[in-house]
Length: 222
Ligand SMILES: Cc1cc2nc3c(=O)[nH]c(=O)nc-3n(C[C@H](O)[C@H](O)[C@H](O)COP(=O)(O)O)c2cc1C
Image 1 (cartoon, rainbow, N blue to C red):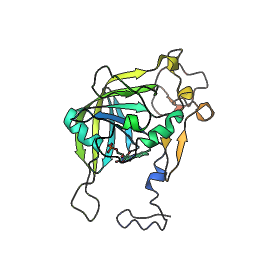
Image 2: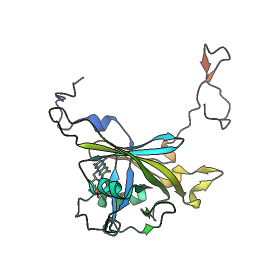
Image 3: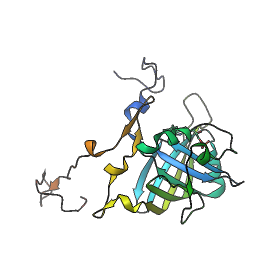
């Protein structure tokens, strides 16, 4: 099948777009409101977009509390959503009033970040402390003149990793079991059973061909 997104006549009950851009990491974003209330919400339009400096983005559909708080404070914190924390992550998506502390709502503990005021989720093994770089409104939906989605770019200024998940100089992602968003109400989990290694092809000296080297990875990204 093929469909044109301007008419969106895909013939299915649900737009398949989000079911085919998968898995999407979940940006579990914490912020502090102007009045000090803690805010926490998951965003699956989220990703890392560079590493020098490390930058992340997430996209807010409409003007949500996270966006408002970041506009005001210029900071946010990402905590890694794991399989063990899936219900708390989901609870933190509830559209409660801005004065509700979503850490408390989800039964989570805020832990002080080092470089930003927004706390991390203490129960999560990884956190990225972020400073706002840019807020970019996305194009208006077809047939409208008003932008609905807003992308927030943050520079990662601090990284927290629970030492228990560091093994032989690497992060043990299999033990962390991060979760990711699929389409519909579906999620995926990363575990030892679905991690595999692929080494990059090595290019010949004359640049005209490439091959795979069967030897173990030499530790160099190519
Ligand atoms: C797994 C998951 C992913 C979500 N991704 C997004 C997203 O990318 N953008 C968005 O605007 N809302 C997303 N939502 C909905 C928000 O989490 C929800 O609207 C939340 O109430 C926003 O909270 P806030 O107003 O405190 O910022 C997602 C919800 C879940 C459960």
